[in-house]
Image (cartoon, rainbow, N blue to C red; front, top):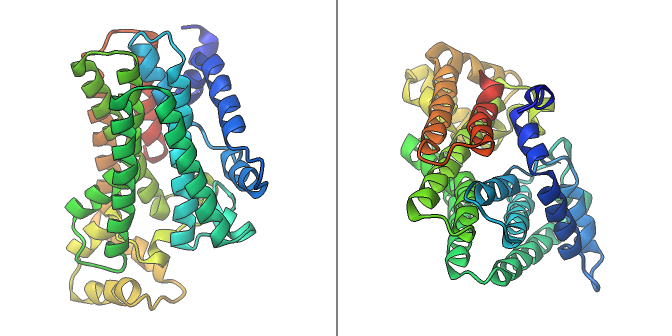
Length: 333
């Protein structure tokens, strides 16, 4: 690895190593998000896809396939599939959450309307399934279609936890495994499967993707209380205002005394929030160490991701995936 490569962030090193394939993925995305009869589809899609996303999930598919020795073309289609599924879920999420900001820009539902966001999301799901079929692998179709169903389950489960202070850490993990980790795991596993990898290798890459996705989402949830809005592409405290019980809040509620419990009941269960409540919530989290505990949990999941790579062939790509696990949690270290 050159000194020039070493000066880059792990994500950027991986992107550089995969640059020719990423260019083909981006070209395929541009071609398949087009619509001859509905110009709003590429308008809405381009607004989100071109808003600075890191293409992390497609890169995982490409890296997994190459790590397992793949020399064909189907991993390009799979990487585009993964990005379409991800973009579709973001469009739907912003409608469900009534969000106003995504990746530092106004959301599509704010610029257009909820109907456009939902229907364009549906269109991208359909495009994703078309690309899956073109790969000609029932196993890959099974992996990615199961992931799409799991994502929907995770989102619906999250709806049942909103404003519910009885939400447990186990339920929270189930939510984020569905809404985030499932697609990370499918991205890496499908890349391995299309490459004809052995079952142990495909499983190792699935476990890597799963743990990486868990770390990724826990970091995002941590930063909603412990980060800066310009770094996470949304407003600080959005989860608090929406009454979402994420890990820092769940742990603070579990350690609350009677007065603190009454505060959480008012601001979360009843959503009776006043100026200063977010600051008080963060002070309670600091008092009970729940932000620090959440930070450690994210780092532990990153360690689990790195451990999953241990039995895969030694290579620069494997080293980059190992570094990527640290990069995902770098914002909370």
